[in-house]
Image (cartoon, rainbow, N blue to C red; front, side, top):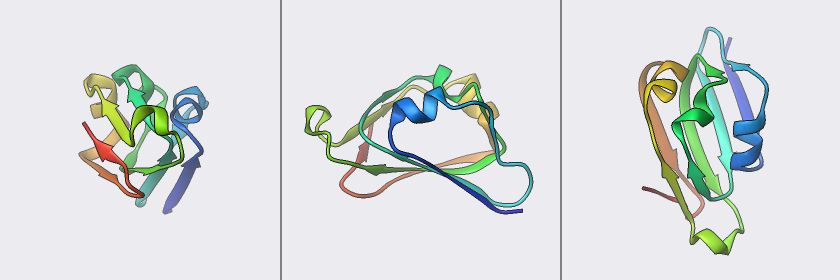
Length: 91
């Protein structure tokens, strides 16, 4: 079915055990700011959408910097849908 996963910050997202959305539409919401390397997607499977929802970490100026590669591509079922909300920008 449809699943939603919520992570308070990037470290929670990258430190989680296997997150497998399975069938249906699956979304992961990640708070906080900083950098997310391709290796951070190694434990993610069958996602449809990833939303960065920001937070109160002024040290990184509201940005999430992504390095996407094979792990990120394998984490999604098809096309990768990334979006930002709450004053977050993607670079």
